[in-house]
Image (cartoon, rainbow, N blue to C red; front, side, top):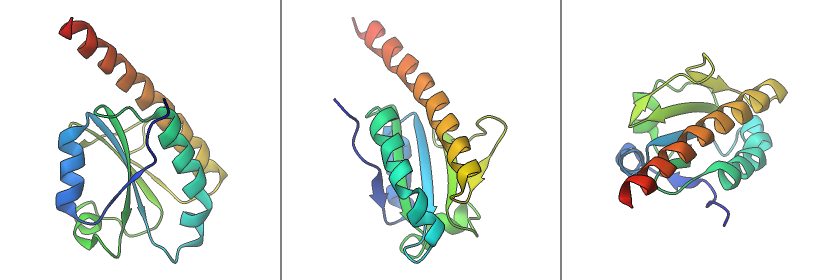
Length: 133
């Protein structure tokens, strides 16, 4: 079964609810008027459907105009900006705290990060399932 598409959140409070419900989260801060955001959106959705694991690894989209509180908290000033979280805390993936833009370099970095986190989330899920038996 494929994972769900990225979840849209409209506030910092909603984003924090996603953090509470998932070990790993990738957040796409975007704007509807942003051409690079539109360009990378299909790739982000594909990554979410391919790597997301409910309860373990979520992909989230945050419209910076709707959720200005979230954008401000994480000091997002350029779109798209992709941030990575583990247990609600921002973390580095492959030496990067964030990925900016929607060009080929950003796509490659985002794919590599999603693949790495997806592997960690799958291992965490397997451990949880084994512990439950």
